[in-house]
Length: 296
Image (cartoon, rainbow, N blue to C red; front, top):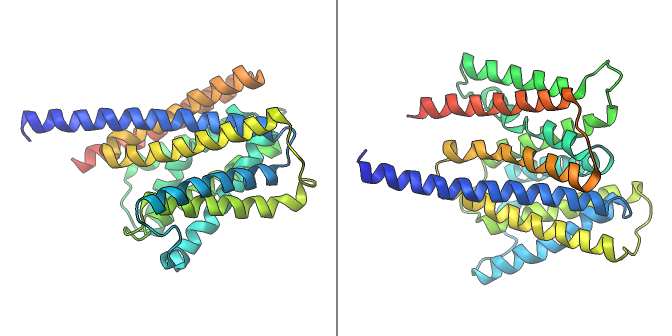
């Protein structure tokens, strides 16, 4: 590789990393505002409102690009599986951030890439290797430190974030088999449609819909817009830099989430949560680093 090409790759990787950090910051802001809205609006209504706003935006973007928002590929077997897993992830993570500390739910969610690596080995036969398996084991130990089953500080509701993590990991695995002909705008349409479905599922269990007050309405709007920017920035990041160079910056979401939890909800993550978070993030970065070295 020439020096000029190396500099070009580094430039694109830096740009991709910046978009990834922006995406993670916006995801954290989205979570915080949706959590705030869920304090006075039923979770199902929050998901439904968020999904409708996102669906309208991505449908408009698809039409502006000369694409059909809904295409037949969306009902293929692999996309149906992806959609069902998306519903599991979205529904349970929304429940998790609504009724458990934002910092705890976000910390557990950071194990998603590790679950994806393990799932790729089990379902796709990918070679993982001893070092990455070791990183996966350490990552799950970090999750257990956050959950602390059997201890006085254990909260059974934290398992909602665990289920969400499994759902998101399954969605990401299914995405590997998604048709490449689908644009990120069409994937956005499908994703936010599943948010609507998640809201409809949750709606009967969270009380009747309410007319949100001004603060709740603004929180819903801010969370929705942040989520749209986050999704667009994430797609740009993954298509700008090398995946192995950009992906580790996903873990900045935990930093932003903890800051949002402290500032907006006066959360105080305990020592075990902080140590477990460091282990999960470190294990994920280590696993990705091993993958990057093997790819060279």
